[in-house]
Amino acid sequence: MSNNSNEGLLKINGVSTAFKISGEYYDAVSNVSLEVHRDEILAIVGESGCGKSTLATTVMGLHDPKETKISGDIEFEGQNLTELDEAGFDKVRGKKIGMIFQDPLSALNPLKRVEDQIQEVMIYHTDMNQEQRHARVIELLNQVGIINPERTAHQFPHQLSGGMRQRIVIAIAIACKPDLIIADEPTTALDVTIQAQILDVLRDIQKENHAGIILITHDLGVVAETADRVAVMYAGQIVELGTAAQIFNEPKHPYTRSLLRSMPQRDSENDDLYVIKGMVPSLQRMPKQGDRFAPRIPWVPASAHEEEPTMHEVEPNHLVRCTCYKEFTFPDEEGGLA
Ligand SMILES: Nc1ncnc2c1ncn2[C@@H]1O[C@H](COP(=O)(O)OP(=O)(O)OP(=O)(O)O)[C@@H](O)[C@H]1O
Image (cartoon, rainbow, N blue to C red; front, side, top):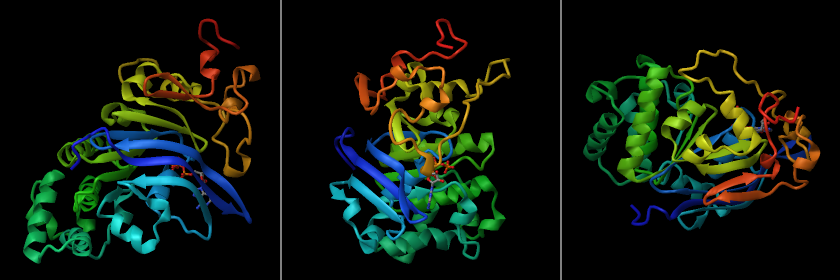
């Protein structure tokens, strides 16, 4: 555990990840810089195809080097992850960095009992004996909110509900008390009540273990309820970064504002949701110059955008890409540009 909760646990510095498509490399993640601290939940939000999962799997070293080109530095607890070989990554994954993916069924082995699956990671990474491991399994199942841990420990995944399975996946991810947890859409497959319970579990774990958590989601409701800081990603780039309060109360980038406007309001009687026109560009069609979001806000004149958009600090710890935010209004707003 760190004494200094502000210390950067993970420092992503100028990271790009390019996939080989028909013999050419195309960036799915472009020059991303980001820090994750202990004791915080950093959410990464954006529509499908913005590069959120690719960034996560880059940090985890899960890409095939024959098909992927990665540049930049990923410093985790003083170690540059981009320099690790497979054996080096095996020591970090599961022990120091835990992962939770969207689909618990594919993350779990259908043929193994819950207890054996949780113990597996402890056998690999710790010197605990069978008795200690069993005690830890029960402790973990309690921690993730399983009511009858001894019984569940002996069950197979198919005997459990979706919410229970996701709790097991979380138990596996935190079994070795990782310093960093990466949760990629951990609640997307679950219904709303279970979603809230799983998010509570994540928050409790973060407090108890003083871990840093990267929470990847396209659901701004989840972000509002959970995150301390938010990185908004569009077309492989971070377009806005700030505290949850800054992002929700003072969003600046047109993309952040569009995402928020397209979010269903719980108390609103108005069913007409804002729809962001167009689509996230495919990797081959990514604009090489200019603001990547510009084609989806065509009413904003080209002169409002920077040719090579950079990040601007609009207030302490609040960064926005491009200067177009200064002029941006929705077409139906007072003083709109349309
Ligand atoms: N192995 C791959 N080879 C080629 N292109 C890929 C590969 N993996 C992802 N992509 C492309 O990279 C872009 C980013 O995908 P990614 O899955 O990271 O986005 P995302 O924001 O996590 O979306 P989702 O929420 O749907 O997972 C997309 O255009 C996707 O089609």
